[in-house]
Image (cartoon, rainbow, N blue to C red; front, side):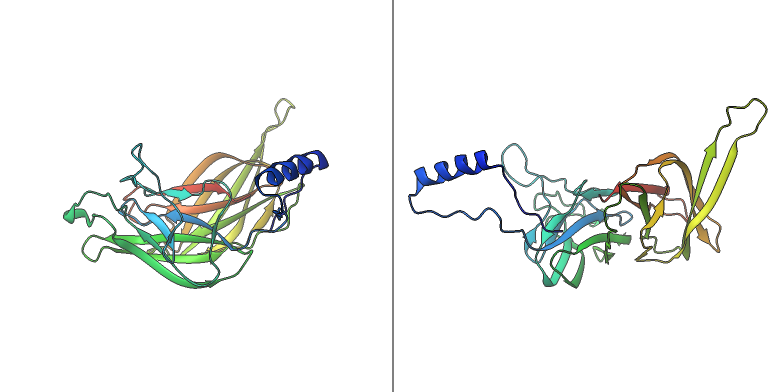
Length: 270
């Protein structure tokens, strides 16, 4: 999505005076839109170390300590950046990767140490499009590698009358995931039982894929993530969808072995 900066005339006048005082003949263009692909990064590789993410050689995530050096902790397992919105990346054929922080303490038994490239995917990405990068599978302490994949986030046009949800599957040992939604409506009439509506709007999501965004009504839902044919599942209760918002649900942890315990992650794309 491209944005233009629009200012009221009084602010334009103030800006013009400020820049004129710095350089008499300076011309400042404040209407140029930003360019680049837009990314969210998820660290969902089981047993994986804390990492920072890169687009080619450009670090897109990092935390500094009080002394100004890179922190030893980046994006931990189950974390994502940015929490809201997206960050810009170059376009064209780009190598996206995850690396451990340069200040990480060596722990050979856990495959940890400074500047280890734990995953990488090269993909051609386009200006103005949205994407998500996932580390996935199980991090191998010996090879110091995990799996990873990139999906395009095809965001529906803004709609203030409805919410949208989708499902992403980074579960390497799952077969096909479905997302079941349950809404319960309590009657105000004595003796009338609650109305329970159960739907399964998303089915058949295999490893390294995502469902399209689907429209759902605003409201509170209970959810079940179910793997077929194993029947393994994880639940999430009292989850509210708001009109005009886009949400991504993602399996986190190991649904098949329960170690680490599975969780249905819930993030907002817009």
